[in-house]
Length: 456
Length: 107
Ligand SMILES: Cc1cc2nc3c(=O)[nH]c(=O)nc-3n(C[C@H](O)[C@H](O)[C@H](O)COP(=O)(O)OP(=O)(O)OC[C@H]3O[C@@H](n4cnc5c(N)ncnc54)[C@H](O)[C@@H]3O)c2cc1C
Ligand code: FES
Image (cartoon, rainbow over all chains, first blue to last red; front, side, top):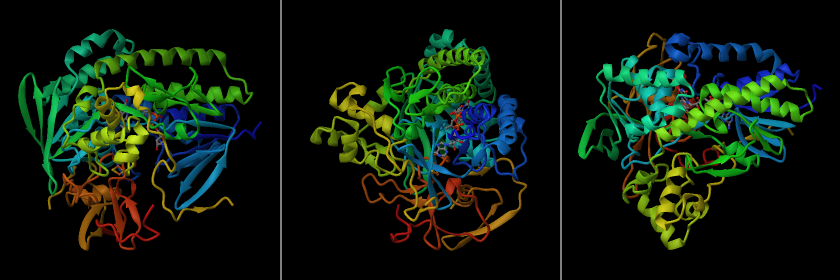
């Protein structure tokens, strides 16, 4: 039974719980993660020579973070762990992994992808200026490096991470100029019944808001971003928004921007998952059954499948592993599975509440001024994109990409894909779904052309 | 050139020295190259598209998680590094300008 080949991509909360379930079944999985240390995004660890303890780093989530780190350390003798290794392609039953200039194709019988999420960002006029960072990036600077992204930081976006990251900055002694939320407060009130599915998390969210207000940080909800000011040499100098009919300006040398996070689904895409359009969050998502089966020996867990948050990632990572084990003919604990499914359902209700309370500002994106840059990689403006749609009849996202180059730059559409789809849909007066989906392409991140194969 | 990033905690670490465009700067052991450079200056590179309108100028990274590739810098030997996920090492010689394309540097 030891000969089933199971590969797990990602050593965040989902990947760690998946690995644990696979080891419990007597198998030795390969666990691949691009990062140097396990933990994933939320439980990301600073380099070894840093001093802060789990309480200082992870606050209310310290106990969970410690459990993930310690449980993973205990798994090390029983797994084939490959840190600092990038999965850049999946094809014909093989995972292509690169490490230190070398690559190999690793065959699998079951592939469990727990690749996590990345920031969902809306382009705002001026966002290409130096000093603009993704919200998650701002948090990583603090968590993993003990730094603030600037001397006076403006938080712009929507979602729980906006308040969390701003509060973490305040607590660490950074100057926070303002928290600017595009979602109006009444939507939160409307979503309260769904958010109450996780009363503990709801309470934490309210406490963060209190912490920010007590610290004297202006918190504005229902803002319409106008512009991130700055110049091409020295970078960001401030943010202007419209709020309750007035124009408001906040000076600052850094902006942390983000509208929740979205799955990093490129690996699932290359492994032939099917995608379906999710109207509630206005994005294409890989499809799985309740346990995480995506077909073709592919299983998805954690935020890489659907963003349900860190606690849920532990649940869905384990579920995905149990599905893989069952399909390999191994017995799984049916009671445990039922319990996990019920937990997942609760997190899903909560996530619906979050999507309702802090929506992706698609109308703002569709109405972005012509001169604003949509693709920061290659400086493609909204005007360029709209022109390509109109002149080349590139109604579909992949065709518009070819004509305008939006989505062809360094980030491969990670930070402009959702926005460009909104702009194309509006320019053609078609539904977002009709513009299609930017397909994932290998390599999913740039790799050196000098990469050598070491498995031949 | 003023520092973009501000150190808040974890400042009690040994110092390391590197050069950026030939200028010697000091960072702390455990810094990423990005933090090493942005606690000494305000950008990592210039956008290769800055001749376009509107010019989009100098860049200082965006995601810090290895996803956007906005933070590329180069070694004196022409090797490309992703500053947000490369630990700084004493003696590094970093260039903020992309060298002429060679087979070793394009990808
Ligand atoms: C920057 C950031 C900060 C966040 N902060 C919080 C927070 O404070 N609180 C909160 O509740 N939620 C936060 N989230 C949401 C977060 O997605 C989840 O809460 C949680 O981390 C999900 O766990 P996961 O195991 O699904 O994925 P992750 O924890 O993201 O783990 C995924 C792992 O997969 C690895 N990986 C991905 N692709 C590849 C590849 N191609 N090759 C090799 N390895 C790969 C990554 O290196 C990573 O370690 C944050 C998200 C981001 C992006
Ligand atoms: S800042 Fe995005 S990859 Fe380094």
